[in-house]
Length: 337
Ligand SMILES: Nc1nc2c(ncn2[C@@H]2O[C@H](COP(=O)(O)OP(=O)(O)O)[C@@H](O)[C@H]2O)c(=O)[nH]1
Ligand SMILES: [Mg+2]
Ligand SMILES: [Zn+2]
Image (cartoon, rainbow, N blue to C red):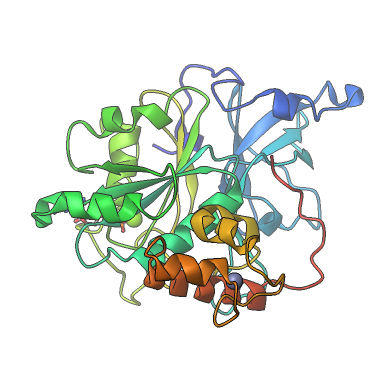
């Protein structure tokens, strides 16, 4: 069921994810406007959820819908549903896809980002680190979901590898087709909370969305076993939307990605590689490259086994990529809390 099709019981703003963070942004003269949460974004139209149900937004001329994303809070006119203003985001998931210059917005005001990977061929620590860097940078809490545990006999080794990627990282083994999906993810869901799913095509994201949304009524997300790819080889899931979770809260499904670049993610990388980045302050030289300099605290840690050289190599690669792909003259991109 997509949010736009939900026309039953009215929702409170809090159930939609509204909080003081957004209320505090409203000026006194905006008191007559209605808060609305973007549910779908298309090239020329957008829909939103309000306390009074789903609405199709009236867009001012020259609106670029690419400036908005699923999960955004906006203020609209109650009668006409004319879009008046975008409220500052608490978190925003942005990513640069190959061949595009501007980052694509994949969702906003997400509390928890589920990074979904299967335990078989898709499992790749370097790719998970890319997702983690983006998740950290977005401001959402990353959680790794391991699917297809039934296809391997050493699921605990996958759990261990995933958990080692970042301090305090939650890793959950889920069976997207099982009856207990909602309860195993309940810790992160619930009224007013928003989760999103990212990960390669075929790992079970749509199956998870369907399980969370409840399958009894409404429209289902197309899953890979119905039709993995269309005739042109595109992924099954091509648009994002806000789906109501049966037990409360909201889930955003995002289309699969082939290549995932890291850019504008310096602080996300610092969180991800905390055990390395906190050593760099101890190096003798301020501009240490951590390759050959005397007094390099990072190299010392590699030598005495505190840091895995492969992990260091992956950090180097992502750090260099981030520097190369982040424009020097970066406009103020509202720093998140
Ligand atoms: N064996 C196995 N198959 C699964 C599991 N989870 C999902 N699948 C299957 O994997 C395929 C792809 O799932 P889908 O939800 O479409 O993946 P998406 O591309 O990430 O949205 C479907 O055939 C699912 O039924 C699992 O835990 N084990
Ligand atoms: Mg899908
Ligand atoms: Zn160093």
